[in-house]
Length: 302
Image (cartoon, rainbow, N blue to C red):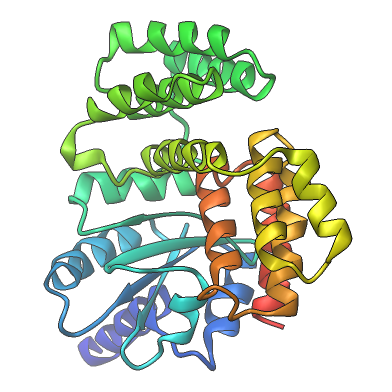
């Protein structure tokens, strides 16, 4: 009887946490994430921080009591998926929902931060006035009111100076207003332990994209170059960066996807990597990110 109970417990554990391969990734992650969120832990045997994260994330996922699953992928044995997703350092955790990557973090985070990440992923509520203020600030920023958004984020920070979502949001507001130095200074105040938070990564990516856009030519000139030679991938790449800076996210995505379709290896897979940075900067919930990831996934996993 005790033996049967142990077997049942092991089966339940295996159902919550499992290993995957390149061949089973679609079944274990893409399809499974249509039923509940799936966290993919990219690791390697030689990676010390990976060994620190593994017991922490396994405990956190099991503590979620069926609201999420964990799939582990050894990138030494199965490097293709990690390369396609633009993963350059490990441990890296990418969360999939409804067949699409929606969020993630890098590094061996403490247990509390991993638990918080899973709670956000499974739509646990953060309560009260702070949540309402953050929603209002995010809405203002999405509507193009960078100054109004900055004021609201500042209200949140007045009550909680270490609020990562507010700090990251304030940095993004500064980016939208063209104040890149202020954006960098704001991110510098984020506690070291929270530098890999998804909101901070998004703000950092937004700063990098804004700086990148400064170094390319005018939008009209780039459009003319692409019209004259549709196979000029560099011109199309630069056009995508310029379109993103102009707030035309869907158009920027489509141009990079055209490069991915035509020549995946161009510029060391540069078009896909640029898309990944776009998605980081826009945030996992942004409509352009959601649609862009669907289109990219259909190319990568078809």
